[in-house]
Amino acid sequence: MRGSKHVRSFTALVLAFVIVLTGCAESGSGGGSNAGKLSDKVENLPAGIAEKDPVKLMVVRKIGGDDHTAQFLAGAKQEGEALGFKVDTFSANGDSAKFHDAIAQAIDSDYDGFIISHGDDPATVEDVKKITAKGIPVVTFDSLPELSEIEGVTQTSQDDEQLAKLALDKLVEEQGPDANIVYLWVDGFPPMVRRNAVYQETLKNNPGIKEVERFGVASNQTSLDTQNAVSAILTKYPKGEIDAIFATWDAFAIGAARALEEAGRTEIKIYGIDVSNADLELIQKENSPWVATAAVDPKMIGAVNVRLLAKKIAGEETPETHNLEPVLIERSSLEGASEAVNMVNLANIIPDWGTSTEFEEDWMKALKEANGK
Image (tube, rainbow, N blue to C red):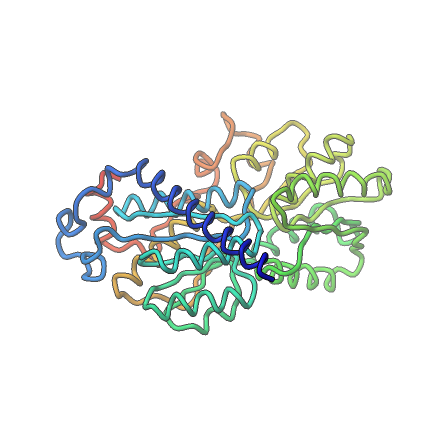
């Protein structure tokens, strides 16, 4: 037992050191925008913002190792620094111990607000209670519903039911109500639970659809694990026995697409959820089996979470929950583009993609202008 205590203490010290180093590196990269008091830059700032010098935010995400996580964290950091805030980020890459240790270390590090992403266990509830007990506001993303019962917390999520419905409706439309499908899904995460509910409803409404196999694991190498699993599945089912794959996370879809391409089985089509630059590159490959994905811009999710947290620090009213509306991105709509489509120019095909004025107050716009953002 004593050895375990020493290991936990050492782990906590290492995490603290990593967070400090990350904070120093990140502050150095954007230090120019943080110079000077916020109140010197913009008149009539909310008192809760003006008294900070500067506002310090911590973003802690449990899952990681995927492009969606990287873009979410980048969006939060970019939005915060545009406002003149200091933003530190930490991804636990699916490791619960690292996730909770990072939060524990940050609680005592003078942060003015927290964004907690993918908190999926009772320990997350206790973490958030400790944060809010110190008067520090919290915004969560894709986390336990029970967190909404804690005063001062706003829960955000993609509209998971709509994400799943968009992808599944397209699958049924193109593959028919008697399709044989592989289901890529992992239990234990609130968004996955919501997506699975829509999947089960789809099966109920289309009794001819047959789930021939399922697989799912959340790790720091989810795509590779999925690729290996799908490769093994393909050896069991010759051509004509699988019509489509429903992938509830883009890390699943990436692995599945690679497996199908390697096996020469691109007659099987993938209908996924989430999008990133890496995803778009795969979708646009010649004869890609990945034909549709439902998504919300992950950078925008990070930005909207920061705005909500800024409003809390400012003492302004915020909702208890907020859903971000998704769209369906189809491979066929990308094929006619004059150049390779990425997360930036995707807006040329899908109007308003990557832009949102939700919760962006006039004082935020003034801070961005003062910071040259």
